[in-house]
Amino acid sequence: MLEGRSLIEPGDFSLEEMNALFSLAEKIETGKNFLRESCRGRLLASLFFEPSTRTRLSFEAAMLRLGGSCLGFAEPGSSSAAKGESLSDTIRTVSCYADVIVMRNPKEGAALLASRVASVPVINAGDGGHHHPTQTLTDLLTIKRLRGALGGFTIGFCGDLKFGRTVHSLAKTLARYQGIKQIFISPPELTVPNYITKGVLEKEGIPYQEAEKLEDVISSLDVLYMTRVQRERFFNEEDYIRLKDFYVLTREKMEAAKQDMIVLHPLPRVNEIAAEVDADPRAVYFEQARYGMYIRMALLASILGAAPC
View 1 (spheres, rainbow, N blue to C red):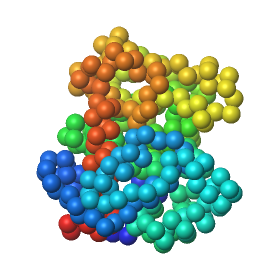
View 2: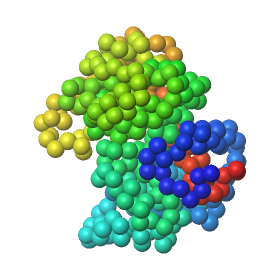
View 3: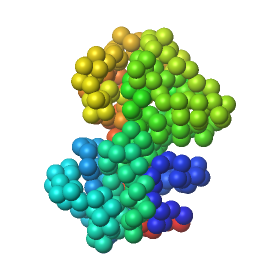
View 4: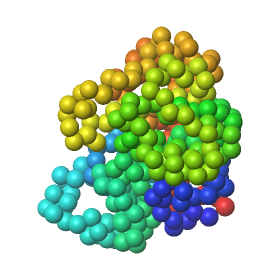
């Protein structure tokens, strides 16, 4: 069903296709050798023009666990981009070597461009402040596994909602499910873009709320999605310094939350979640990272035609 397809934004896949991926990921998680060696002889190219730990390594771990191999670069300085080669030429060249390309690029729309010139499927691993679809799949799988269903809950997004591509992708995708209220918690300078609130939520009649203080809304949340203030998205260092400590989740703030609330974070964490919160069973962000590997295994196997129909 997904064989040969690219993934540029979460909307590229139907809910039925995403649910099939979740089911496949759950089988991989629980089945000791399920799909192992299914991609033997296939090659993944990971092209990261921006730093990454979890996304890059989880994709590479996923491919290796499927029996495939990996090549690529972790920063543009080690590629011909440093010599001035265009993105189109890089993608066309790498398409000659690999069966699938995973790319992160700081420019919005770069993944879409890559998919149009590549001769193999392209998976967007983050393009600027635009989309991060495999993080969204990770988030959805985590919520599904830990809450039992994708619907009927209130989620709060907290932190940098202006530049946070993980927030944008997840908020848009959750709008496709039933019974989900979204609360956006941020300082005035980092509010969620209008294309999410007005262009998606209001257009579809989906309830949402905006707040400035986490303390005002944390008791109503079933899921809290924390994000860091991203230094790399700011043009002004003074603005970053002023806003980077605006929200810090502490043990004290967690006392007001529901006992079954879960705390997600796409990571990396800087200081927006105090280390003391890690011991709270509601803090599931490292478990979330593990689910990221399973969903990427399911995605790669499906795109490469190695998954059972």
